[in-house]
Length: 232
Image (cartoon, rainbow, N blue to C red; front, side, top):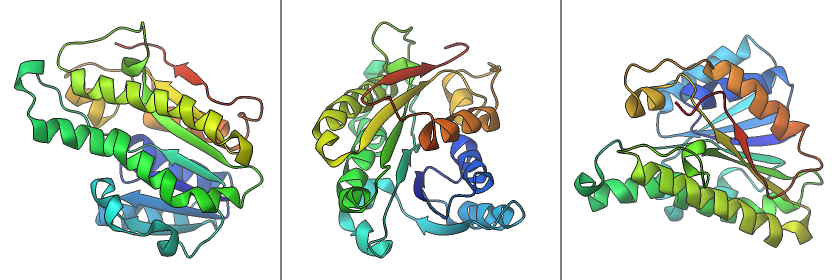
């Protein structure tokens, strides 16, 4: 099984990669702007298992400038975990166009274009599954918080994209789901809610995400699934 993980250099993404190694997948393509952290992760994974961890220092904001299919040598891709995220915590009236674009480039356009570029690779798989990591902030009816208009609206977009792709890719036997995460102790949570301590650690959430991505999705498609103890 070959898996692509974005936002792999820190937080939940970092732990997802380690959990995938424990699950003994064949190859993990790790994507992040931070090459040094990806190299550190690769070394750490060597002590966990024999999975091949391939470092791809890619900025999702620039993915439209490359041919990702060629980068991974046209290999079959079984699972994509779109975990990368970017958050701006500012009052609505103070968010600049540049900041808004960066949030949407990372949280919406990046996953959109990555899936486009790897669609032929996914079609080669008999068990293809795309997992978009969303947020409770992007779920209709869930609590919303001041300062997070750019982030939460981008996560609402990725939730809707999930539903659209699940229907459109059904003919290719590709399942698409979105896990809407609540509070997890990460740098992003600290940026959104300074001083708040969540009940869940990144490694706890990573175990759930990997289990769902690899095994627990067989009868689920096009769903936005809340995974949350709190939203704070």
